Image (tube, rainbow, N blue to C red; front, top):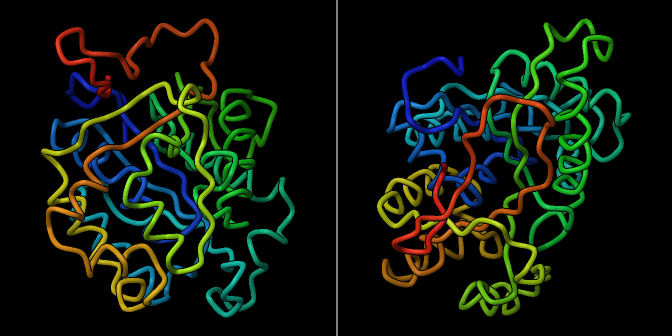
Length: 270
């Protein structure tokens, strides 16, 4: 992926804990940017590249237009056999996880990096928390030539965003998660710096979510919950994405980022 690819939108790299997180949290923005010609890619921290979840991830990324899976190959905290012979992501040395993400940032050369929020999303999954921590460090380290020299030539992205959920944006989703006994860790509304209307991409986003067939088959997983809703109910949940700007690299010429439309008040990329 190269930032020189022709597009009015910035190139994106998503870094997420599991196969399906990319579709659930940023599927609309990824699809929007890919369709506009922006370079997009996704790094997934857990599950082995030869697993059935990797095949499902490949199908989802093809739908979103974000290229082939880029997998770090650590084991899921709750499914140790998801990557035989590898440590669980939450047990792996932080430096090892960071270096893996740095390598993909330097290879993909994105303008914008997107990852989980500090809660680890609504349910506080330990893999999401670990991915957030490692990505924040990797965002800064990727631009420093003396950090992780084996991971490629330095590249500093312009901005880092966390996909998140504000209190006011929970709506039906919060009730659905509570019904199946899951946590709901939303953030104060003022923490959200970008509200992105992805209605035009919600059909493609939902198709990518449904490509994660293992999760769709589970009763308590979010893909499974969404799959059992009516189309209007699903769209009301997935048609808006929320982001928090975590950090901006100083002194960079690239200014393309999430900005607010003066006519609609809706924030889009850029």
